[in-house]
Image (cartoon, rainbow, N blue to C red; front, side):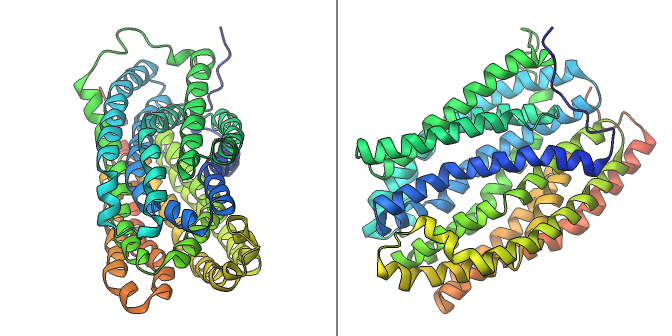
Length: 462
């Protein structure tokens, strides 16, 4: 029999398990960031500021749609982690079988609707005329690739739920290197413009998803599905949707506020758009460890709730907060002293106009966001922990608060105060979300602990 590579997170030192589990996740997120970063770098370097601004102007719309899809995939993985923690492998396989049906339907519907409506979305967002064609040619291909994106995120989520965070990393490294090559080939050789960057991302995502599928078939005996496992079961489908939809909607609700903000930013000109695009890419890369902590907390919480060990969830949150707090301070120092230099990866340093107009804005944006990385860290850790505990609908409410904050800045403060208001929009959203997430976490962990004390089988699905 093929050797299994699963890891039980319900036994052993929480801090050691967290660091071992999150390190491959962090590296994987870095390489996942490379998908969009390399697109941005190649577009900015070889196609110019207008093309860079066009790709950047699609960021919130991209997050609205792909955030929904990836959030659903992450939510689907929570019941799998809980069943693995409870050693209920028969139930685990039935969840995976129903994930196949639901994931396929959601992917195809999302791709069809978004590709049909994306031009209208860009018009509604007041995308500047000089960057509109770049934005449309890029985002329509990204939306066509939603099935490939969901394939990878669903399968990698299952693999991580079983305690293996290393294997998806290897596939991401390979597909990220492929993305670099394809970006250069499609843009420089085939002259496909901004669409070439999107096609490179689509093909690379598809390759990583197929590799995950082949790997799962060979290395995870407990995932060998029978015809019975593939049978559609309403009870399991409802449980998956109850976990996946709130997580997906939370990302999309947050993105609605981002779209309102982006609409206001679009009116500030191509230089501001380019500066914010570069700043967001750098900050997203620097914050990969915080996102990795959150994903680790979700899997750790799911397995330990399944195993009936809520006290280990509490320790996980404490350990994640310590690691994330120390790293957040490091990120601020990097942004303060080196933010400008890192931002030049996305800009054409030979253009004096870029140096004079865009670079100071990018540095200001980076420093402001980095000042609030600790609130951002708590969003990742607490939101994902709450989801791992089985309360995705509560985590979704944090997204509503983020939407309100970003929407307020987009509708009122950015038109009045301009670029400085843009810099404080995301930090304000993070603080507002934490005001809800902190008490929500204590409520959820207390409720789960009481439920397990009263009936150890209370959290199990029959």
